[in-house]
Image (cartoon, rainbow, N blue to C red; front, side, top):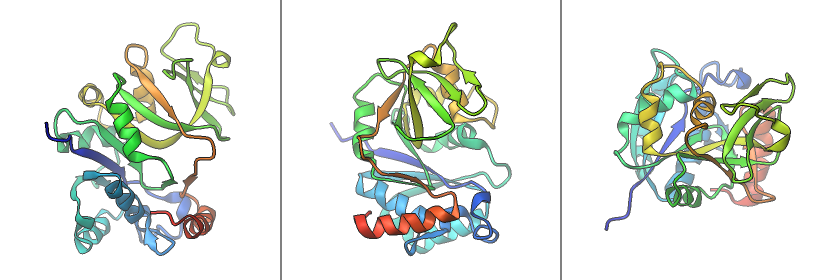
Length: 253
C-alpha cells in the first residue's frame, strides 16, 4: 500500500496588526526572522517533516505572498493558495474554505505562520493518524490568559479565560478545576470527518469555538509538548529578536 501523502495548511492571512509598522506594506508571513520570512521557516520545517502538499491562505497583501512563492518555486513542494482577499474568514472559516484543496481521506496538519517551535510535526501527524481522534492539538504548559481544559484521557472538555472568568464547555456541570489546563500552540491535526462537519457552519468562525462545539460527541485530544519544548509567538516585534537568538543557537530549520 502506498504511503499516505502528508498534507498541511499554513495560516498566512492575518493582518499582523501587532507587528506594525513592519506590516504596513508587507504581509506578516513575509516579515523576516533571522534573514528569512516566517513563511519560509514554516514551509521548510513542513517539507523536512515529509509534507508534500501545503495549502496557504492569503488576505493582507496576498499577492506579495503569491509572488514570493512563485519566485521560490514553492520550495519544491505542491502548494495551493486559498484566497481570502475578499473577506478574512478567521481560523475555522479559513480551514473550511481550504478543505476542498485536500485529498479526501487525508488528515491535515494546520500550522500558524507566526509560530516558531521544535514540535515533531511528522510525529504529531502520525500519532494522530494512529488514533480515533477527530483532531489532535499541540499544547503545552505555559502562562497565558486562555486555556483549553482536558480530562484524564486528554480529551477536550472546555475552555477558560483566567482574566475574565469566562468558561465554555459542551458538558453540563463542567468544573474547570477538575481538568488539566494547557495553552494551545497553534499547531493541530484535523481528520476528514471534521472537515466535512465544518461545511455546516457559516463562512467565518473560530476553530476553537468549533472544537468546543463538537467536543461533546467526538474526541478532540491534547498532544502535550515534552517538558522543555520550545515555542514562540512571533506576532510581536520584541519576539523577533528573541527568535533570531534562538535560531542562531539551535540551528533551527
